[in-house]
Length: 469
Image (cartoon, rainbow, N blue to C red):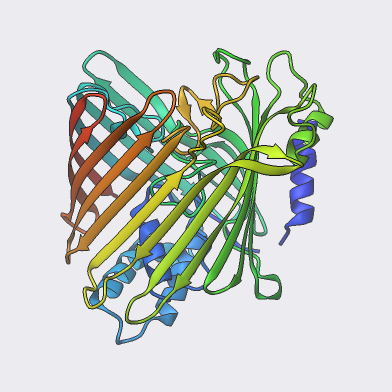
C-alpha cells in the first residue's frame, strides 16, 4: 500500500493537470480502427493511439478534431466514419459526462473449430476456442461521471465439455485533472502494431491492476505527452514463483503531427520467497542488477515510432516497434523487431485498405530467449498465455490484410505465415475471410471463415452478433 501511494504521488508530480476521462473504449473496438484511418488521412493530427485503451473523452476529442478538419470535399468513406463516431460519442460531444448505461453492448458468438488450433487463440483476451462448438455471450455495463467511472463485462463461455464464467473487465476509474487512476481489470495494448504487440497485448487474460495514466495528452511546447504506469500480481498457481509482481511504464511523445515516439518497459520481480521491498521495486524500474547475483527479476524495454504521411494521392502510415529481452551495459539487447505499413486507401480506390506487418525475434546465437527467464521459468505469461506477442520466441511472422468498405458492410481478407526455428522448425500458414454487415445503426453481424495449416490443419467458422443499446 505504501508503494502504491508513493508511485501515485510520483506520477502526479512527473506528469500532471483538467478534463473528464470517462470509461475506456475497448481495445478491440472498431472505433480505434476509425481513428487510425482518420489519422492516416490527415484529419486527426494530435492522436496518440499506440497506447490503448483510450478514454471516451479522448475519443470525443479526436472526433471533434476530425469534424473540424474535414470539408465538403471529403470522401464518402470519411463521411461514413465521421457519422459513426458522432453517434457513438454524441453525449460526450454535447458535454454530457454523467450517465448510467446498465446495458451498453451485448455480444453473442458461435465458433466451430476442427481442433484447438494455434491461430484461433490469438489476441482473444485469453478466451479459448476449443475443438467442436463454442458459444460465448457477454454484456457490458458502465457508468460515467466527471470524477468517477466504471465498467463491468461478465462473459459466459460454453464448450462441449465445460462451462466457464468470468469477468473480462471490471474496473473503477477516478479522474484527477487529466490523470486517470484505475483499479481493476481491463485489456491493454502497447505499441503501434495491429496484429501483435511485443510487451503488452490482448493475447492473455486482462490483468487486474492499479494503473495511472492520461488518455488525453498534455501539450507542453506543442508536444503531445501521454504517460502510463501499472502494477499487478500474476497468478498464485504458477509452476515457478507464486504471485510475482509485474509492473510497466510507458511514455508516448508526439513532437510533430506526422511523428510519434514511444518508450516502454516492463519488469517481473518478487513473488513468494523473493524480495518485494522498495529497493527491489526501484531496481526493477531503474534496470539495476539484472544478470547479477541477487538480481531483482526479468526485464524488457524498447521503443517504437510511427510516421504518418497524409499525401492526398496516396497516404501511408509506417511504424516500428523494437524491444530488447535482456540488458547489456544497462541497455536492451536480444531484440524483437516489428515493422508495419498501413494504406487507408489505395490510389483512387477510396474504400480499399491495406495492412502489412512483419515481426521477428530470431537470433542464430541466442536460442529460446524471448519471454523466458531462468528464475521465472514459466515465462512472461499469465494463465498460460504470453502477455506480449502471441508468436513467442524464435519466430518470424508475416501478416497481410486487405479490407474493402462497402456502404453498410466490410469484407476483410488476411494471410499469415509463421516460421519457427527452435526448438522445432516449422512453417505455418493461416487464411481468413471476415464479412461484417451493419444490420442497423446499433446491430452488427460478423461471419468469419478461416483455414490454418498448422501441426494439423484446422478449419474455423465464427458467427457473431453485437448490439449496441
